[in-house]
Image (cartoon, rainbow, N blue to C red):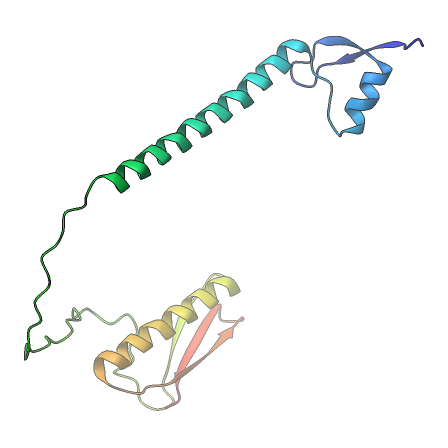
Length: 161
């Protein structure tokens, strides 16, 4: 059986190589591209080196886990249970408010400029997070609603409760 030889370019280095039609059929059938022997050796070396590195890392991890199992861990003295120790208050650092929640009365609003709808959603989320913290710190129950106003290029936040 006679196969014709074709000259094709190496996929990696573009040198001309000769391959039989049958070999090319197999290569293309696998969804691969033809490469010369020099490039093939480099690729195989690269893959084998990666495999060696991976195996050495795994063996190091196994050795470390065996050593950690063998070496005794220092034992901690039993913890003492103490009674009637007062719990300190939570410390929340006072900082300048980013949004004017405490100054707002019912149906007051403020406006925040935004770049686009994605930024508007980020700002709205930030406002509600700040409101939650404000309500916890000041023991209030302020409720807000917000709307994206395209023509003004921002969102407006109203106090509704």
